[in-house]
Image (tube, rainbow, N blue to C red; front, side):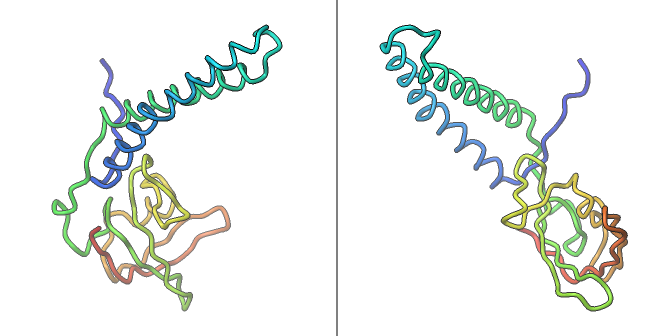
Length: 160
């Protein structure tokens, strides 16, 4: 069998996915099944929008359950202790500033499975993370962005 794709994630990210999976299986799935049963009672299924809506939702729920199960089966838990404290790696928060004198920004670099840019968690596949990975505090790094290159200096690196 070909090498299976792995999903790097923090322990907290794994726990969050397990919680979502449990919620989908124990609460969301039964609710959707109940909606389907009720909608069937409305008669002709070919013109039943409630039934179609519930079936569509069921498909999305089952797809998400399958995705989460696959991600958890192929999870690679990040070990911050395997990398020096001042080196940017997955699971660490990196603070940097654009040179010469922009305001500092901080992001936690995580696997794609737990990325949430709105809460400061960026995927290790993002251009910013790819450029910063394996650099140390004090390093100046060039980040290629669609708007042009960005020169930054790494100010701090903290483990989660």
